[in-house]
Image 1 (spheres, rainbow, N blue to C red):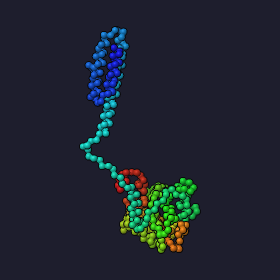
Image 2 (cartoon, rainbow, N blue to C red; image 1 turned 45 degrees about the vertical axis):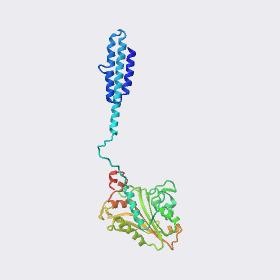
Image 3 (tube, rainbow, N blue to C red; image 1 turned 90 degrees about the vertical axis):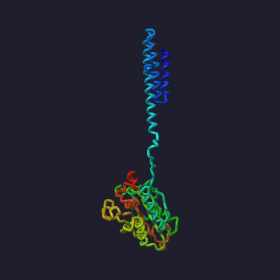
Length: 337
């Protein structure tokens, strides 16, 4: 009797495990555990056993019943989980199709592309350089005086004493002039880094586009005319440009560039500090010391240089009053462009 119970248990466990669906599993349950099942039929023969054998066989029968019930429930749970997974993975062909998400240019890069396109139309070429620069190209070659505030660790990200993250793309100008004789007409786009406190109009990481033109007879009027054409191409004839005297070590004379704040139309808002003007960069005539440093004849050649922040122009372009939105990663904001 005990051997038959154990054999029945082994057969039933295998049958439960190999059941392919709920219907087949239920059939196995009825066959082995039902009221007319094999286990019940075997239990009916318990009375024919000797009196001293009945307790041991009875305990074995109860244990077999519990083990079969556990095997049944375990397989039932497995089949339920498989069915749920298949349902989740099933493709409902009656539903409308889902269009794939289409990528697009980030508004900063799109603005930078548009700026470059304008200057290409004015005869400039694109030049690029490393984001990790050395001290010579970042300061010495650009005529920075000793102990200038820009060299301080509070303003610049230093990797070592002689290696740093560039704070502007001006080093590209020096690299190009060292390798090319005049005339030179380039724009240098790229990412820059400064220890700026992040606020509505400043960020520690930003994009910049610098320009350089060196040739015979270049004047400040050429600089102003070039930038005015750029501003009108970028924002239309309603955009005005303002030059104010400023100081940059690599240009003399130097001027700050400001454009009409297109966010408020010149009325004044948070983005422009309620002045109606948005400062976008600096400009000026290339200092003769810089030209001499790359071997140019300053008696023959003059040039102008300028640098504008891409974020500032993108803010004006799209009427955005906080630069931090560009770097927020919020797709609700970025999908508008």
